[in-house]
Image: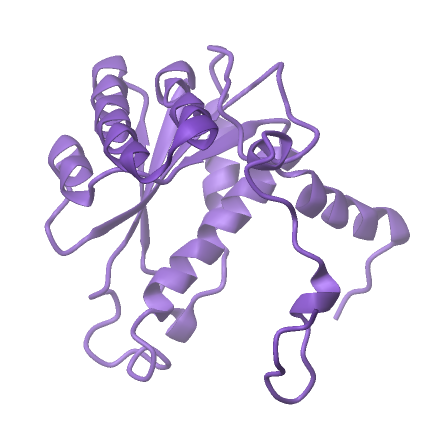
Length: 217
């Protein structure tokens, strides 16, 4: 195994700690070679049984992006009934506009049939195909940050809406809509942390040794 120099190690941690979920984008186009490098990083992600269950739909057409924004906004308004008062206002302020602003949105999908009926590891834990897809998304996010690009994960929509808009087969899961582009408003902290929606939990209280312990005070 090759050892990292100190600068190389710091670069890895910089990407991990600096990556943010971004909602505001510039319209500047992303070079095709940069997009491909980011997809290569995603495709190099680990997958259980080496199933590689992902596909990537690159959406740059304005009409299609507007349809995806409609699907996300419809779900956002439906979810808002679960919140009251100030928290409801904060929730409604979450930007769907990023889907329209970003020059590119990547729909990352998961194919639960990839690899056939018997994939090493998936027989015991079926969700490992979705976990593997999440690893690809994380790689894509870190690579985007390294390339000076911002990325935002739109996580509320009805899957069938996205399937219809993007002509995705019914057995394929549209796991994530990732808007990507340049930005001049990169947040220092996660957006929901800045908005006091939630605070980062204390890591020491999340670590147990050997067995599950009672909740720590």
